[in-house]
Length: 310
Image (cartoon, rainbow, N blue to C red; front, top):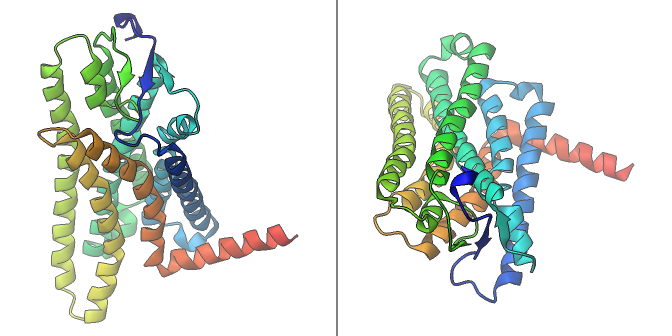
């Protein structure tokens, strides 16, 4: 990929129309980033430290927390670096890495949400066979599968983007290297590649969303068969956090990659929310309505406080 390009580095111009706001954005984004890392780390510690949470649902939630820590780390450190007044330059290989890992982690999370929906489907529709269907081996295969297919998707999109020649200009009108902005800088006709990329980026989330919709249609049907109102309420409450997280994750993809006429400022705003705010909210979404997680979190915080006092 490198040999096809005369450009050795790119200049990240940042979020459009935010001139003279660097200090405010630096403080805001740094706060989001720290809270994201801390929140997901606490969720991980809570699940690992509590044997009651060693179930398939929390195993997948652990992986989601790991992804949510790495996902904003793809673009945020470099963005914070130049918002602090440092160089906006990023090497060609650094740009390739940003694009690859952004789509690798994003696709992995997309597949992971689908697997988590399947887990809830089995738990509610086939409760007596849940431990057999969602065995340790099955969970490990599903978890590895999300990363494997995420890697394939990201490799395809990265190769598609950087097989093009880049001979200047080298200014990326965005705050990190992503497909739409990189294609604008290519020194070749990109219309066919844009269509292939659009189908690839759009088809994968759409397929996942349809599978999730199918799972939840079956779940809703099963819940409505429960006679007691309390039973229905408990069943719905176990799914509400997952549905909220799915909406927060899938809506930015629709707004950014499937809009007919791209809007740079809107794209950047939505992307920041997707990169920083959604991973920060996921620990809150999954813990606020879950008594077991809240109990485990309380224990972890109490133990940390005791260690700090000593």
